[in-house]
Length: 253
Length: 226
Image 1 (tube, rainbow over the protein chains, first blue to last red):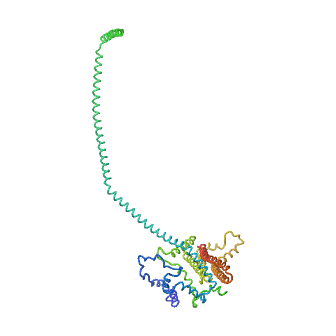
Image 2: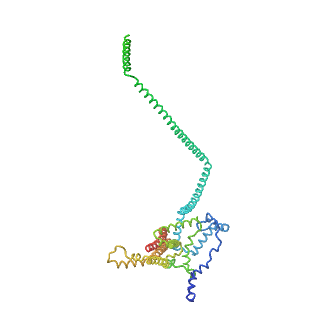
């Protein structure tokens, strides 16, 4: 941004350079270099799981370990505090009580709600991880399902010949049935024709028979004269009378 | 005594150079950034809080208003952290200085109002007359509404300054009272100390609430004008 100021100042000083002021930001951007550092390590190095151990929330443990061979750290601390108080390097003023109350409230809050907040933060992180894990598991499951489907498909392909056999059998049966049907139809047709001829013959014979009978009857009836008819009838009556007498006589016995 | 009472509000200097700049620049150091997905507990809780506040604040705005979301979220975080850090002993709170609060309030308010006047001039002018006023009152009411509009930045700045300054002063005074009573009468010292503790809790609440109120009002002005 300062380069723009410089360029505009130069423009007012030398009017011929006024057009250069428009190039100012572009020149600035062109001269800025990017991506000159080393790229970050991939994968990113892992963070330590827990922070350094700290006593009283302020003083790291290493301080105590450093002092223990030489002097007791608590004695050192108490001595320093008493020295500051007695020499009035630290003056007890209104600020002291304010500090006491603020620090007291803070310590109380941290002790009481600290674990709760820590668990909450851990839960948030766990939720994030669970989401990603869920996505990964879903992907794996999907692929596994695809693999299983593919395997079952391959197994089915092995058993395809059963299907073909069944189909072949079906077709053979159908062909057989059709063949038999047509055979039967042929048989029926032939029989029909032969029956026709037979019935024609029968009819002819019957007709001839009837004609002959009729001709014979007609001639017989024609040949019977009237005299013969009367004699025949009288004879029949006399025979019947005899039979009647015989019939009457027998039941009496 | 009087000199000591307001001593904590003097802008601190180190050998004549203003240290207030360093103090104002300090709070962002407490809000770390991270390039990992799974962070430590501090960063996780802070990120969760920031997500919560930003979602809560920016739902009521339209797309144009949401371009201000970075500004408003950083505003509320800055005021909250500065106020809370000011509660520590022997610290300097920049928000007690009217100059800083004016510097925050006037540009934000002016930006919102000028944006409103530039885009929707009829809507912006309509704010000067509430609905349903009887006709004879209109001229007076327009003047009153104008004054109320022009007072908004002043009110924002002075509200924040007064609240934080008053809280700090009160804590100082009651601390002095405990100090004085500690040599005279010990049980009353304990009573006053209890009052001090309650006041501290109140101050923590006030610190957060003032940040919220400031940002909420700016967001409200924004909503009116987008």
